[in-house]
Amino acid sequence: MINDQDGLVYKKQKVFWVWFAIAQFSFITTLGLPYVGEEAVYTITSLEMAFNHEWVAPTVYGVNYARPPLFNWFIIPVAQVLGWDKVLIASRLVTAFATLFTTLLLIWFIQKVFKNRTFSFFVALVYLSGDVLFRRGWVAYADPLFSFFVFGAMACLWVAVQEKRFPFLLLAMLGLIASFLTKAITGYIFYGITAIVLYYTSQNRKFLLTPRSLLLQCFAFAFPFIWEAFISKGAHGSGMIVDVMTKLNLQNFGHYLLKVLFYPVDTWLRWLPVSALVLYFCIRKPKQSFVYLQNPHIKTILWVVGLNYVPYWLAPETHVRYLMPLYPWFALLLAYMLWQMGEKKIKIALLWLIMGIIIRYVAGIVIFPYYEQQYRGDYQKAAHDILSFVQTKPLYIEDHSA
Image 1 (cartoon, one colour):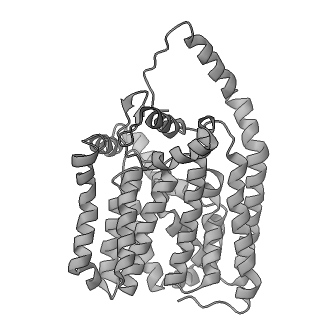
Image 2 (cartoon, helix red, strand yellow):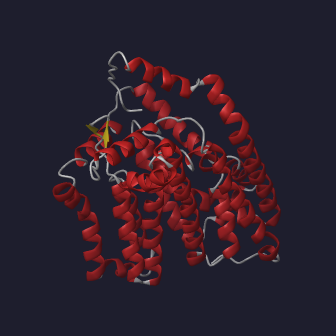
Image 3 (cartoon, helix red, strand yellow):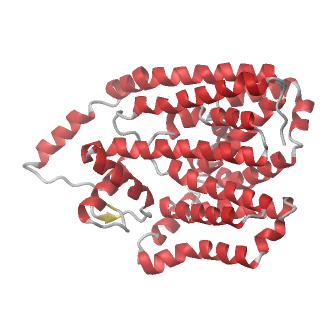
């Protein structure tokens, strides 16, 4: 349990909540931007699924995409309401709401485990900063939705073990299955490591080994095989395995060494400005900072984060966005460090977080559109040129990944 500091509940709780809402609404400013990165993948697969009435195996230009369809299932009804010419906006709305629900789930988890309402709002504000605020929280990739389900499975498992309540374990298994149907099998690794850590750290570890709990978890772990054998008919499994094996293929040792060295730095940069504040304050009082980490819940989270982080850190080909299921835990750890440093440090952090939100609005309204127009060109004109070209000549592609 984290005790509220004197007066902090009344002075800051509403401020945290208001700025959290303002930060979430900033996603509206980037809904209309042109395609970013590989956003076209899920918009095209959703278009083809709806056009072909193929609801299980997504395709890109008629070729099996080898990914499960849950993200598409969310996009398609939104696109049908808005109109298919707004399919990119529909996709971004799904990711934005996935980010919102992840934040709400984080608030719920903290209030369940740490028993502190004000602290939960502060963590929510920290979560909705940095990489999540400026890019990952709204870009139409599968990662935000995947992260919502994976984190949901991890959080519900923790609460289920803590309270020995089977319904929360059922929710955890549903989240785990949904994570597989959204993107990949790797959600099971996040969950499995969390279960192992909780088994060794929780006094209620026997709850995980009750017949009913084991039966439910066995079904959840068997579901990908059931899906592949009886529903998708092998449409997804091979693609997922190939994707994982590709990430483990070491091709250039020099590139790999740089990646291993820079990966933690890249992770730290994603959480600016909070990560910089925590580092600065910890350098000033290193011994006191170590004491903050003695909370048993924080120790458990450190084990969960550390054991899940290492495989991505050491794998030859990975991206920080693959760590998105750990983002809520990162936010919790950073916020906890600041919270323990006192109200003065919290006020400094709040000012920096507010500055970040203001910059995000400026970026969404001015900077991002200017960059897209000046440095990436006019997408609409390019699209019209392609349409004009294919009226008279066939167009062939060799790479449809983006």
